Picture 1 (cartoon, rainbow, N blue to C red):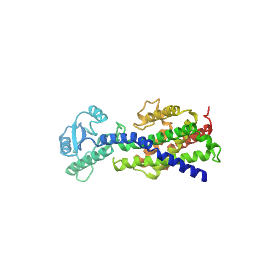
Picture 2 (cartoon, rainbow, N blue to C red; picture 1 turned 30 degrees about the vertical axis):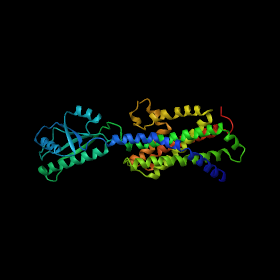
Picture 3 (cartoon, rainbow, N blue to C red; picture 1 turned 60 degrees about the vertical axis):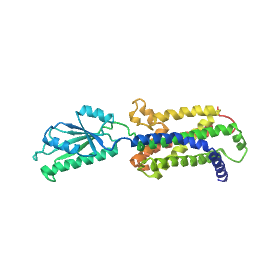
Picture 4 (cartoon, helix red, strand yellow; picture 1 turned 45 degrees about the vertical axis):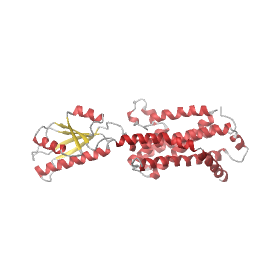
Amino acid sequence: MRFPLQLTKVFLKTFLRDRQSMFFSLVFPLSLMVVFGFINRGGGDALDLGVVDQAANELSQEFITALVGNPLLEVVLGDEAALRESLIEGQVSAILILPENFEPDPELDGADIRVIVDASQVRQQAIIVSVLQQALLTIEREYRGTQALFKLAVEDVQARVQSYLDFLLPGIIAFTLMQISIAGSGFNIVEYRRKGILKRLFVTPITPAEFITAIVSARLFLCLAQLSVLLAIAILALDVTVVGSLVSLYSVIILGSVLFLCIGFSLGSLAKTQQAVQAIGNIVIFPQMFLSGIFFPIQAMPEFIQPIATLLPLSFVASALREIATNGMALTGILPDLLGIAVWLAIGFVLATRYFVWKEVAG
């Protein structure tokens, strides 16, 4: 272990000297988070609630009046079709449908009042449902005491992708670790070969496995440091909530970093120049940027693309991070994603060791 540890320290010192590269590798993800952070904070306090009054009786009018008087809501009356369009376009936060049997008759079993919501607006949904339940409880006490007369049946139309930072952050982290890992390891291999560093290391007792272990360890340390800065800014400055365990989150980050470091080694072994490795790296990076569910769910893509998109390595990493960060899943709950990461990691490792050479570019 003496050679890998010493070599890791050397690589780490070398990488840390390139402060400009470390700085600019964080500019893009930070810019995205800041922009979406301002978008997330925009808008007024009142929530727009669409109301469809199919009952059109005294009770429904009394109920609507109570909602209009609530300072948390801005009531918009209309028909269901038009309000659904408004919900999909983001003009209202939810739709309340008062059915024709919305009656105060105590002999009736009560009515199901539908509430159509967009599940991505979690905060708005909780507020609206709470307000509606309180208004219904008030009316029930007037007519039937504590016996339930009406109940809410929440229908989720999943109108839009979750566009807030809670959804975006895991994807940004996944993309950033891929970019840092592939660009760093690929460029390093080509640069060391061009300068003859690999040729000189070839005559030392250092084995290829020790060399790869050392450079992966150094790059992994830097990747974790940069992503920690990104995560800290998101949580402390932009109020992003990470529901799951940070231990689970960092476990996936480490696996993803090692995976893309191996892919970067493969590209660096195949490329003859820095320009070539940059071009090959872009071919690997940018399609995954748009097809791996970073900015919008894979389910929103055309159906013929979805099977391919779900099998991309970045898709497995982004999905695992998002399940942990936004849904609070443990590692045992994301086993399919972990299996996908493991398969791609094995493929990347085999390719990295198969095509790695000390003195000449693999042909």
